[in-house]
Length: 184
Image (tube, rainbow, N blue to C red):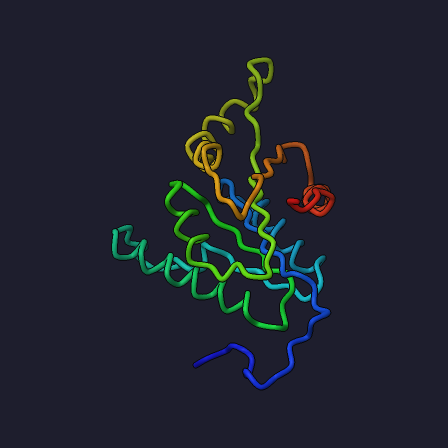
């Protein structure tokens, strides 16, 4: 089914550029809550939870299933990008490999769209806070996307915004994201 507007329709030339917010970071309730809050704060918005695209039992991690999930993500994001109803698309995912984000971005219809890649990280505590060390050690293996995005570059995304959200609540994180200027 073709969901693109009817070619005979007059486009609404006053519609703003769409914004695609891609949030990366460890799979946490905080990231999901930030995505949900962005969806409700922004107008005409939708949230695609990347985890939903791979909600299987059993979850089988193979080349075939990874390809299928990436294809599904790209299809859904493109459908939201061409749908005239949505101005803001929020997508949350754990990026564990550089080629994953490159594959997704390379498959998107980025015409008339601003992409904001935001990495949420919770910096590890110092040795002076021994009570927090077990939590930090557990999170260490989950926060791979920070190193993946450090070397990432895409001509359509001039910057990766990295936020240390350890001491911030969801509303503060959303406010910080919305106050960050768009790429020039």
